[in-house]
Length: 94
Figure 1 (cartoon, helix red, strand yellow):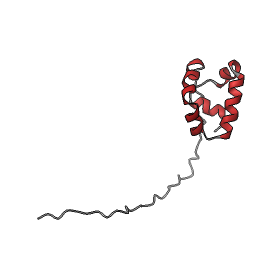
Figure 2 (cartoon, rainbow, N blue to C red):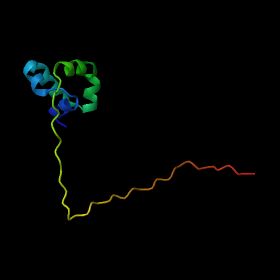
Figure 3 (tube, helix red, strand yellow):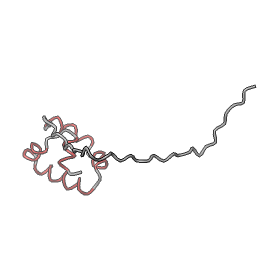
Figure 4 (spheres, helix red, strand yellow):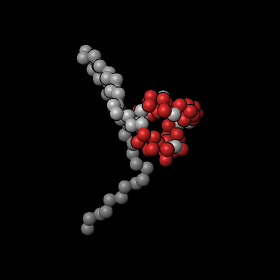
């Protein structure tokens, strides 16, 4: 996930943020590249909401749609059956 995609997921306008606060945008982009998105979110949790309010993303870009061929059958993945490691006790009826 890129930094721009992350900002879109948080509904923050990346272009408006970059134009208004280029130093903050550059610093956050550098930090985002060094850690996972979850770590970045937990580190900047209380700073994301005020930025979202200032630079709210008005339109969310449409996701890319993948078109499947009609001639091919979809693959069905086998789901492994996992047995419980705990024994099941059933009460005896008297």
